Length: 528
Image (cartoon, rainbow, N blue to C red; front, side):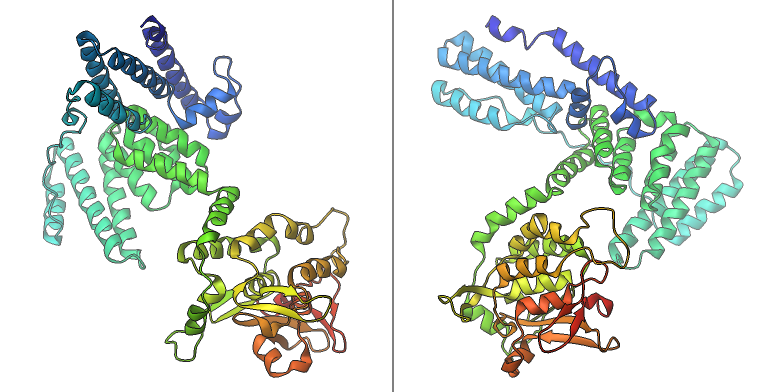
């Protein structure tokens, strides 16, 4: 068993605590937060600082020690002597207690398997799970009444009260009542928050009056923090620690501070603050929820993660002709219209949202919407989602097109924006004049031709509307539609020509000449 003693030594435990304390001291000294990330410390490496944002060193060590204890318990169970079995039961109990104290960071899955193994080999019952469950907390004092009469009564008491201590308690009570009114109003009326914002403001003023009486009153300081957060004063929440040093001992304050950083899209600092909240109170369930939210956010915020997710989801998408015909029939009770604006490489955003819709509904966008309209980049997305899967018949101008399956899913479009489209939309260098086109039309035409061939608009799986501007009549918007192409076959409106017309941004591309018709400019000049 000596092989396990190194990991379980008290020396390692003390060193882990020293590192956590040092990280905490650095965070307190280095302000603003960006300095913490860049500061080169002689004791802590940059890698260690990054690790501390994910998990305290003591919890990291605890995870390793639990793995060691599990291995030791397995060894004891396999020997199966009386002394070894008793030691294994004791070890499992220690692991359970560890998970109870560090449940945010330490996995509990392994020890459950270990208990089963113990039961199978020896028939002994594993330690009771009751020791792991958190005992219910005694209910706090009854919430104060929320009626106006009680608030008036408290205000009258304030006028008559001479004791500073009692006044502070009355201010805190009034603040707590208005907090509850604000939270109740938030639940009842989420669209109109004026009333709830008023209650939060009143609550904050009462907490501030309580703090004037006693600057060290933690209840008032935390109340001001919460109200500031609800009033979207995120910088104020973060800086409160400068004027209220006693807040550093409060797990709740660090949780509020983490939320404030999250609202400012500073996820690195938000993670560091929530780790501190859990270090101070490992049973703070709301802080743990915030930690899990930040973890999920950091994962799902990566385009690559989402693309991989959508790629797997593509296998579940259903291309049913019956569903398409029913949803697009005149008898249908709904008519869904999807409008996608332009915006260059910003088209990655609608492509992302539409990928999410397909992932959740297991239906292609062309089956969910009766009409798709798009301008410029939005026109490309609209066309990409509605063009049918096609193949060229030998070397002829004719194409065999699917009646229900689009050529691309929304995630395919997202992939295009990540790779090919970026080269066509971004400006290649800085040596350009505002009114001089940067790209040749041929670049775009080659890209569109590879993707859409010579398929006509009339083949679109859903009604399609793509605006552009005729240079001979700049006052009018010209609309290319599936309906027009079907009604007038001689127009010969192809996907390629239509997209060339709607995507020629004046400062990036020259106007596009539609053979036998006119020159056209980007549709965003009129409609976006």
